Image (cartoon, rainbow over all chains, first blue to last red):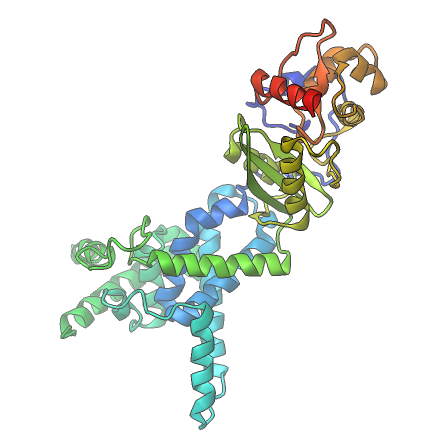
Length: 196
Length: 222
């Protein structure tokens, strides 16, 4: 529609005949080709939410999801490669689940139970009251050591490639393979030992 | 060998097959099902937060009109885009993402709400002028001058492409005026439907000639 319309747009030829110098809009649009964030959330949000819940449990996971998506929206225009959106979202989610875990550890645990109850009640108002992963093998994934849990989750839940996982976890692709391998072996044992 | 065997096993187990929840969720990407309701809740909460914090640059909403679904997009400057039912909504959102900002979010901002309300009044014949701020970010230079000249054509009146070109300061640039109108990012608000051919023929319209004719009839009878 403007002078920076896509070349395949039928109006581009008309624009060229417009006689106007190729003026740019004030905001200096980037030709990044990033999709609208709304559509990014529709496309990848459910998988990111599953990933956060698998890593941190239903409530902390949902909180981490919120933090990740807000943070992603804020820095979205700086993303250079539209093809990297999915891996980029998961690396943010990955960091937020780590932050959530640290916050959980720092949270003071007073002897008085009422406060704890209050926190839970409050979270149920806006969060997920029921663990959506209950009854699946994913509850056992949570019992894996951190790196194995991350690697297995990113591989089988986020459906990322080993090299994408490597960049999310900031380890080598070989280390990713090892962690997936060890994680799956341990998971097999855990599932076999589960009476349910 | 062991690894690939584990992988086959994992793919079956972790994809949620055999789980009674497998069908319940939006698990298009595999993995355990997160129930639709869980996603809907998380999505609604995110939505509220994005709007609260004003973390987006371009808001949009669909708007039902007598001619079909319109799309209204706005920045904090003003309305930046009105898309007609003939336009591809995803393409329009992609255009906004590329040419304005990729921080595009569905939200009923005050500008969007006011625009939708005034569009309803216009289609009912009770509103003759629009009173919402405009953001000209999707147009520039001569094309913007053509559209600003077009915006000055009063309700119920028409002008020729030549008159608009002249009013924009370049009487000879009739074709350029035509192309500016054909790519009007703000149809209806900037009434390019009021621009006709010099022989009085209706001419073209991005929303289709029947819509242009209907808008002219609406204005003639209001």
